[in-house]
Length: 299
Image (cartoon, rainbow, N blue to C red; front, side):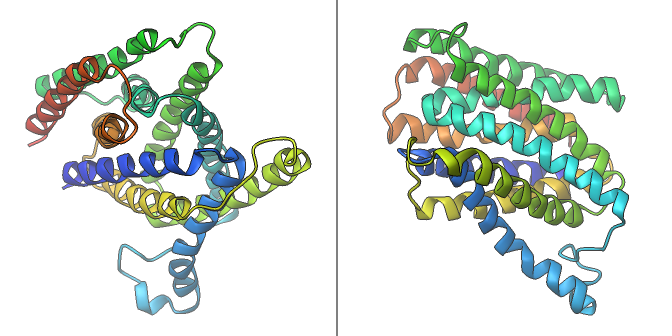
């Protein structure tokens, strides 16, 4: 069950990447992030309010949001900070890099998550899973080498390093998710950390973007920003629920989740007419083979 949920989350996450790219086109990055988070809060707020004031309606369901203590709130704030750091790097990079390049580089995140999961949680993979993770990660890594053919210097291009930093902090977030899912309700994690994101991002917008907004790229509202929230909230809900199930493995779930790179890849190829698609398709085939091996190893 958790494996199927991981694949569903992957497709949703891939769609989320596409709407991010559309939203960032000729738009200010920081307010786009803030507005998307506010939309996420609007989606999640009813579940929190009903759980607090009419608990009998949702209690016992996967949509119920249990109350948590002060210490737990601090852990959720840390989760919000880690995710926002990753997002800030990722959004800026995505705005300036080709979608078919930035998304696959971000998709190398499972490599770091797998290493961390093995070191921290002691997870072990069977032969099929190990082969699947290995082939997938090699394919993801090969995507980054295509950047050289597109005139992007991997040594001096700051946006490339932004996506690398986004990937590393994203891997840290994935490991922290597993820690939280073993101790707290998945809905509580998603709802509370999203609201804390809104507060933190509001402060960042007020003090970093607002004072210089007239000198930088202006903010324009696009309905694509609302779809960022819709697809992300749904992808995260499925993802958190998958991690909360018995025997779920963060290394496998994270790898499958990043296979959603297929969606922005084809969007970049067909709609944005990105370059070197033939080379990227070869790498994409490797990703699909890796996904199949992961599925066979988890049956």
